[in-house]
Image (cartoon, one colour):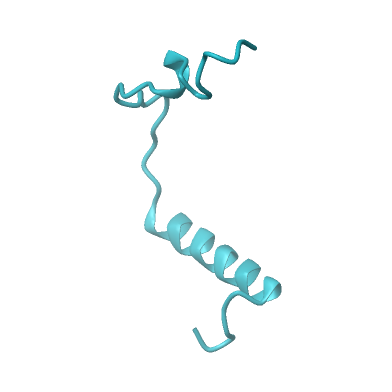
Amino acid sequence: MSEEKKLFSDSRWNDTSKPKIIGYREISEEEQAKYTKMAQEFLRKKGATKKDE
């Protein structure tokens, strides 16, 4: 690497284009509640949240 070139000066590091959505699907309320419960249980096991939250 040449000493004249600055770090992270390549165009790939400074790309300001909008992100492209490559996939999307609707999630039912039941699925959303299931995933929320799973996330809360995981956070409790890791000690990130209290049991009453």
